[in-house]
Amino acid sequence: MQPAGGGGPRPLFGGALSAVLPPGARDASELREIPDNQEVFAHQHGDQSLIVELLEYQGQVADRDAARYHFEDIAGGNKALEPGSFEVTGVVQVSGSELSLTDCSSAWTLTGTQRVSKFNEQARNTVRLHLGLFRLPRFSTDVLVTFNDPQSISPDSSSAAAAGGGHGEPWTVQDFRGLLRTLSLHDPGLFG
Image 1 (cartoon, helix red, strand yellow):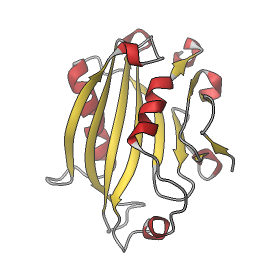
Image 2 (cartoon, rainbow, N blue to C red):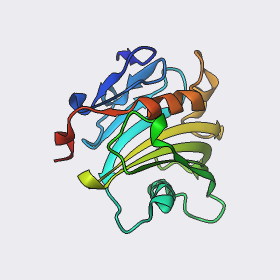
Image 3 (spheres, helix red, strand yellow):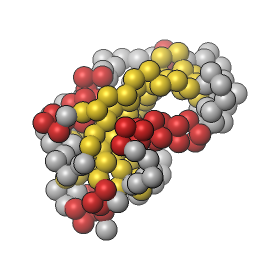
């Protein structure tokens, strides 16, 4: 498996998009099957991950609420919807002048936490999620970038071994923001 990141932009979705990834990002498609609408990267020595996902544009959701909508959708997929299992701690609009993806009508970041289990295990880990949402109504697409940053790993979780054996620097919020700033569209045909 080839590390990515630490250099120039990396092609995503066959080169239709690109972004600068954090150092040591590894393409998870070399380990498991990934849906066609996702690019997933894993930290070499920990349980951190980054997902770039193409989703259907949610026109019924106001821009200011869209990041929370997708965060709650992720919580549902993670079976983390019960009270106390997820929390949004901040939502901020990102200025277009800070972005390379000029085709979006608005962009947002969200920070929150979810208590999730891995592989349907009983043990729950606390994961901080950093979301970046690019709204592209012209292409009927929401581009969602998710940085999963585990904060507390249960000793009974299959992630406990990875958490304890970490070598190399963990990714930071600055790495995530760098990805958001450099995300660029090269081929609108990606959106059909």
